[in-house]
Picture (cartoon, rainbow, N blue to C red):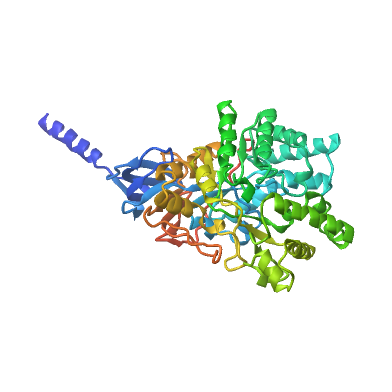
Length: 525
């Protein structure tokens, strides 16, 4: 009997110390799980692409062990506002995102998406990029397919056909509908058209993400329009790259954020995202009146070649400039201009001077029109105030989105947000300015984004969730990209894991490409 008892004790002791196997074991981490709760020290085990366990895992053995050395271990960041439709296929390692802690990107924003999302997702699935990819369906993409670039309202038949395209895209895996109501041809749509399309997306449990109609003097009206769409279509709303731009609007963030608070207090699911910079980036064409851009590039050139119409366009440009309280176009800097790369990095005012023209806003408008005649340019607009950026960031339902693609290193002078958005939040706004806490910043970058865009199994560190994981040093994480030298990767991230595969180790991209397409709620495979 004593022998049997001794054997049972021995077996129990052996069982207590039995080793649990896993693929990856991260030890000694300062774990911030994405909920917003405070950090704690512990270990994290990964097996078969999923998180297996979190805690004091002394009895775990792994094929690969990573010592976090008390660095932060958090869920992989989710960038809710991307434009990677083409760049991801050309540069599938997505280094600018990986070095910034991003493991998932939502693309198809600002009304522009892949035309055929089923084929797009098939390509993403075959590609095996380094990041996960989800997509919205773009209003401009849909409208242009049915109505080209016409400046008019949709007929009932055209509306029905556009609604059908949105429904098809939702079945193909879109997470919702996006609009870019500042861009052609979306700017020609009225609110009723957008509501109808949002209802089509809502029938498949999608959301409505909007680059609103105006982010400057009429920003209040534009925000109210987005909220109205959400109410009439009974659909969640995401307002993209939330900002107040133009000198005349500086300080209005208290008013615009209050609009979001009021909508949420009424029970409407309205949230926002932003990038942590005082400059925006879009095309040069937005400096022209909307009507001047109708019909495509040939139509634009024809108008610019007509002296009377050109004079009307210039008049509208100068009225806009005065309304935004700018004396000239020195705030507008060229990011990429194909006809003459020497323009890259220079303001319109500087280019105007190089051309030997008078230092007057009217002549700068002529310079802009000349550039648009030759195909236009991608621009950086220094039009925001730091106080507004900080105030918007303090709002708890604000997420992060770089509003970027996958840039070609060394090409052009793109906005640095494409390289440094998350690191800038963590370094400048968390560590330096203490605008929000570290735990809160990570919640915005992870679980809040996953909840809003319905990305099941992501955004949190908990057993059973996808093993998208970042490890970084909160004392050193920094953005290095600047407006003068934008092609620089963020630093401070030591390890990035995507679906259980180490994609960044010891601060270097491993070349791993274990990302996947992520489908919206209407498609399961």
